[in-house]
Length: 118
View 1: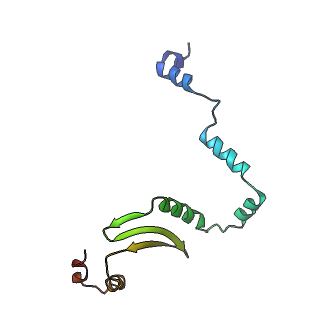
View 2 (view 1 turned 90 degrees about the horizontal axis):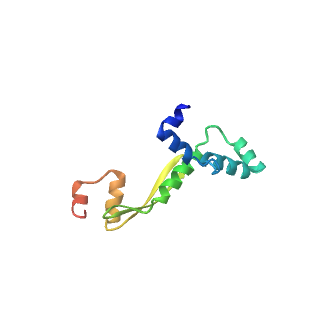
View 3 (view 1 turned 120 degrees about the vertical axis):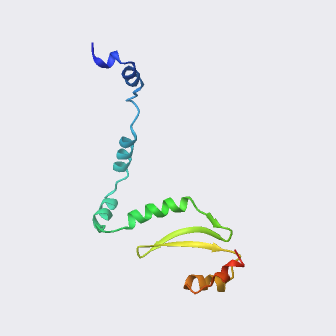
């Protein structure tokens, strides 16, 4: 008698296997081949090996799905974009005078600049 039949867990696992359902990898592979056009293949082959646009697009898509995010009482992160291999974070800032923000961004601020408004 085979070992798998003497162990109840093995029998249970074998009984639960529904091989008629497509596995996620098989579905993804099938969709990829069905959605592949000669234009997509040509664009893929033209793509530079060091091109970071694909990973950047994936990061941006994931980040932007979670937005907007309230960072603190005055700051709302509204969008993340990319330009020249640099991520750009777009914020809405309320309740802080523009002059204080400009000094903060320039690195020319005193603690007293923010203590009265935060």
